[in-house]
Amino acid sequence: MEKNFFTNSMNLAKEICKVKINKGDVVVDATMGNGNDTIFLAQLVGEQGKVYSFDIQKIALENTRKRLKESNMEGHVQLILDGHENLYKYINEKVTLVMFNLGYLPNACRSITTKGETTILAIKKALELLKENGVIILVIYYGHEEGKAERKMLYEFTSCLNQKEYNVVNLRFTNQINNPPELICIEKR
Image (cartoon, rainbow, N blue to C red; front, side, top):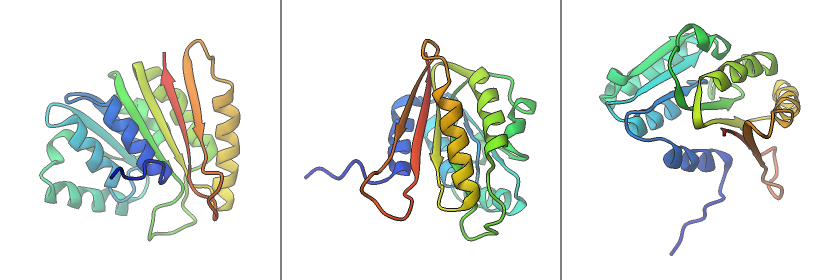
């Protein structure tokens, strides 16, 4: 029996990662959070690859470091206590994929959220770092005021990207209640 495929945006984002990422690739987790995406990406790139993982909250870095150590994966992951808009300060190589899980850190202070302005700065820098056929994945949690503003800014920004250079897709769950997360993917041609 086949499992449901279109369950939520995060699961779809992970399926895209599985298709796009190969062992040895360099990828970015632009929003480290509690380390779930960082560990997932580290598994996909393997020991030959590299994951750069960003967050502005020290607790996110500590939680992720602990989880990486427990999983024996800390060797090919660089944890960075800084905003994703500063990724250009740390990365000077081409990357296959950049994942953003936007909103606030679960089980933490909800007033600390990603912001449209800094997320768009990060996307602009990530576009420069992307390899041909590379992807930026944006999982947008917009069930709070800052999230709604960020979502609007991301729609405006991504809809203006040159179609000769990028494929942009937006996935929304139209029959789900309570502001289900949305997915925007930008693929470099």
